[in-house]
Image (cartoon, rainbow, N blue to C red; front, side, top):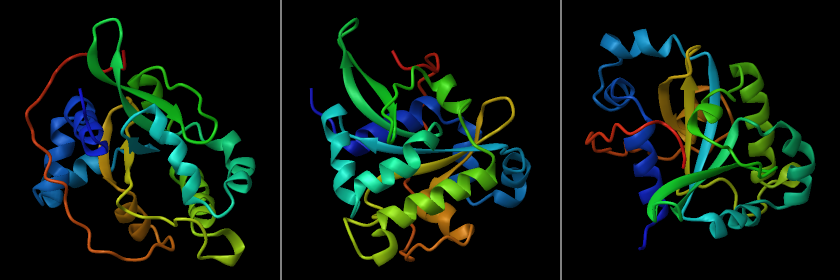
Length: 202
């Protein structure tokens, strides 16, 4: 069985993103239901999608000095996840696994991920330092930099652990005044074919 990074992202969106969040994000009705939903975002998480577990080590190549980034941020990455595809031996079916970004702690299940979000100020502090390291540290221009071909999403979580806002890292960064090179943002056109299995990673 073969799949791609985009397959992992689509699977996550289809399985774990509430239908009302997808509608508010993609049909332009922020004035109608979006504002009501988005005001309840209480905590924030970041998710980056990789094709499989072997591919997560490629993240190191995106830093000018990965060790410096690891040293500063690995103790503070409980809200930042690498989610990747895997075949689960118990049912031989495709599913998702996840580890924290630097510290590589297994996420366990989606409920644990959603409960791990940071308040917005703390999230922005982490993200600012993350971007600093990804964009080459004090000298700038190092490593692979921040590219939005990387499948990164920022999700706002409500006080009852539901995803109520989901956007690209670029959109979130630009809206919050972070130093991100502007590129044209395209919506991702997710299918709304729902799979209502329980919200957990096998």
